[in-house]
Length: 320
Image (tube, rainbow, N blue to C red; front, side, top):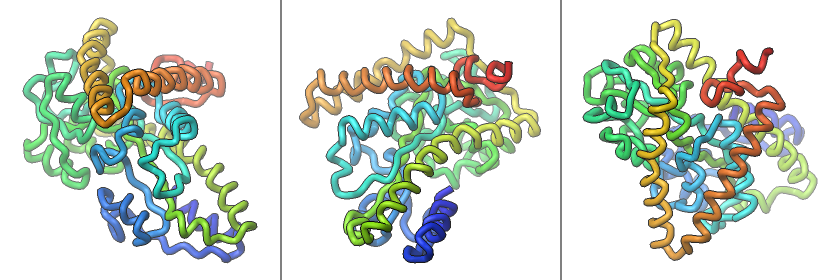
């Protein structure tokens, strides 16, 4: 979708803007993306906050396990959060938009995850806060780079991975895992950012900025919707490969929620240690929870389907 955005921008500005598009990692590696944009190595870049742990601690709050119902809901909520609180950690760049991945599912190669106890002793690929969640559930997190996960699972180095359904197809994980457990109630989305070098934006002519800003608004929404839709592709590929999809019981979900409470508490403590007040951080979390509820109701009302989430957002419910 970013390459499509680039070509559309060239078209709408009648060629006054020309974008050299580099695929992921070919100009800047994901962990170096933010500083690369600040320093002008590239004008625009896309990455997520977990590639640079503690570099964007306030924004990481948007990835806490708060019961996110879908990528669309989490993405809308994160954009609201950034507008409301304007974290200083992004002051050096211009934010074009934020979005998130779908709340992670847990995919495993040999052992199905039906209960909290099933995770104990398993090594699961999960970086950043996602890793903290896996650790709280009794698993061992590993921050393995995504391109290496397929081989690591096939060789038994990893027992599985925690990411959205889309990766079953894009990274072909459906070829090396047998079980996928949907745990949207307690896993976390990855907060992504698309940012621009401030100097590059400021140099745009005023009339071009109008076109640019309008297009950013359009693609911000399309990007959030995209994360919902690509999960269906991954799910279908998983079905084709014979994967068993698992939904934990209500009793197990209650156990899972209790298990991840320390992750939220630890995040609050970390931010207090960085100089923020506890009331301030708890206010951010309350804001995100309220936006999650608000946008979930909108998702149901506007009939936007998602793979993960409560029954009301599943395609079967929305087509009635």
